[in-house]
Length: 141
Image (cartoon, rainbow, N blue to C red; front, top):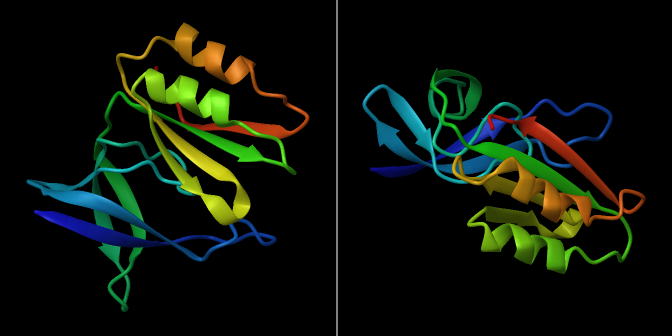
């Protein structure tokens, strides 16, 4: 059964710019399987199965892995008017799933296990690092 989990985030000095993140999941036998790339939750990838601790308001206040997938997550944050359209298209051609937080020009990229690191690097190396920040909050390749 598909469901959504609302995660309470730790905001430190204004980051992340939101206090909660909602992720689509599938009920799994021993927890919840993540179905979309997280924008703000470190060490969590698509396909991971997690167990959660619920807060009083029915939100996730803590979680732990039951099973980690072999997928990776890359975060891309763009400054100014710099365009990353060609790099995002490059990632999509490799069957990466891309979530975007438009207001902040922030992307979360779900990298499938079968995607070679060399091909991923080709797409990311094209980014202007003076205009773009890249992080690997869940790297499993």
